[in-house]
Amino acid sequence: MRSRITRHLWPVLGAPIPVRREPDGAPAAEQIVPETPPLELSGRDYAISLLRLAAEIEHGLMVQYLFAAYSLDPPGAPAAQRPMVRRWQEAILGIAKEEMAHLVTVQNLLTALGGPLQFNREDFPHDTVLYPSGFRLRPLSLPSLATYVVAESPEVWEGEQADRIKQQAAAEVGGIVNRVGRLYEELIDVIGDPALVPDSTFDAASMPFQASWDEWGRGYRRGERGRQASSDPDTPAVPELVIDTVDSRTTAIAALEQVGEQGEGFGMPRDEDESHFERFLKVHQEFENLSEDQRRALVRDIATNPTTDLSGPDVGADPADTETTSPIANPTARLWAHLFNVRYRKLLVSLSHAFELAENRTGSGSPGPRGSLIHRAFAEMYNLRSIAGLLVSLPLDHAAPDAARAGPPFQMPHTLMLPHDQDDRWRLHRDLLDASATLVARIGAVDGAGAAQDYLTALAQADRIERAQVDALIAGTARAPVGAPTP
Image (cartoon, rainbow, N blue to C red; front, side, top):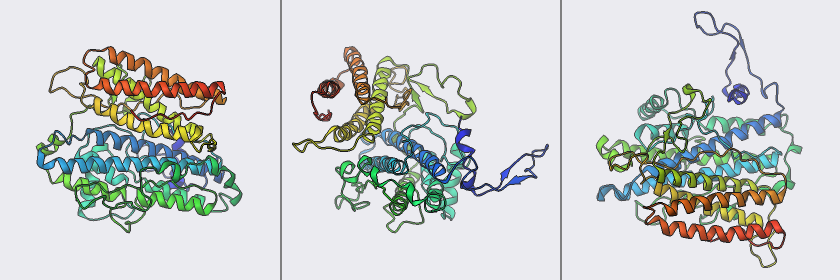
């Protein structure tokens, strides 16, 4: 399945394509120099295909970073190390938030080029020549940190430290960890070439449908990236969301360069605290200075690739290309995991739906349906963090104190395609609210819901408000905001 993507990526590698191999396994004697764009694609189509891959990668990195951050255990750490572990957790969560902003900016680029949006990703994608290291949900460790450092590293990064970390990363994934920056470098080359992507390709009329920093940058200060929020060295640096709109070649290149500079290592950054590479490198250095026992004490024992599927890997998946999954067999934990998946889908549907609407405020100045969908997307981010915090404390299978814990599964839904009709799109939101209500009721009825009951009550109340507003939109009787206070 992944070959439909990889067969168009040879130009990115800049290496000859082997036509065949000798019987003894020696390199092919016959080779073809790849062309840009690939023969089956126009320049615009090639740019769109690369952008869709970039969106998938940004989505995958965001989820892996969130899982790693959730696996850290500041309250359970020795008192002297809690501030450091909390700083690590907030730093990685900040990077994940910035990856989400990158994902949104890539959707703006796709919108400007007239391409289909891409909020999808594979649960366990086969390796491609550009995907950093496959998709794996795993607790934070020195080897996993090494893969994050290498994935975000600049093209030129040499020396003893670089060699050591690259070796750690390669041993962790069983091969080379690819730099994400390679993809953005190719995108800049392709989109920057008028012969491949003419000026007429960029649709300025799409701007009202694109995400803007004013809509999505809430809670963040423009231009404050990397600065300390206080004089306390253990206070995480303030992240900045890079969300750029695109109406021309110039703004498209600027957006790609912004994303590359912040995260994907375009040269050594001017301010070393700005890039994801430097931030991950700092965490890696501090983590590496600890003993193995000390590291284990700071990270929860969470299962790798937790899943609600009790049968294990997806039916038909190639075992050689699929990480081992950890079925969540504990009944209570599995109900929470299903609820997590529903809210994760709700986040992605809200994101996708928002791009289908142009913002149009009501006469009172309150946000219209698009603004309300953005509000709901933020609310779902907090819901995911709250539910993940419960899942990392619940047992994967047995309730024994030393048993592995479950974790947030981040399983992709059966589809992210939106219905064609606008009312049917709102009905999809209602379906997700109904599915969530069923799970909330089931969890609330389980003995031991305990302290989580307050959260369930608040979530149910927020959902009832939203459902009434969605019903009004479907009926055409109101333009009430779809948002509700975060539980």
